[in-house]
Amino acid sequence: MRVDDGLDDLPPEVAATVHRLAREAVTNARRHARGATRVRVRVTADDTSVHLRVADDGDPAPRRPAGYGITGMAERAALLGGTCEAAPNPGRGWTVTARLPRSGAAA
View 1 (tube, one colour):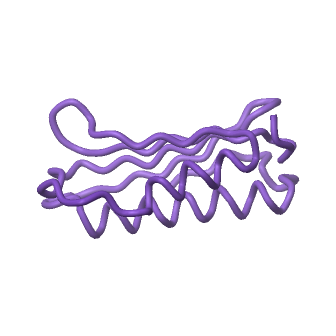
View 2: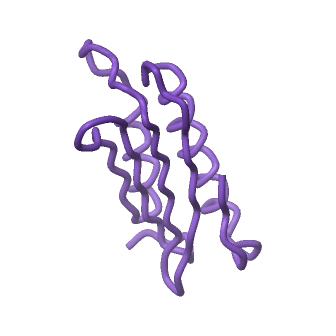
């Protein structure tokens, strides 16, 4: 896990959303990424946005009916005017990326 410096002043709703998105993404990787040896979590920011990236190196689990985890992550990000996407990587692994407004205000 790597969190850049300068993120101590985030509004509580942004910090909580980053934490919850990261927690859900890591939980999904532990639960569904067969043979994963690594899950990387990275939180960065620029002047206007906070960026989250969670990536694993496992094989995706066999397809089954979609749950609510990824949908809920996207909805949570959208409440703040941000985005959250999850998709398999070319080859192995799965990556979740999110961008949230640093101000916490919906766009």
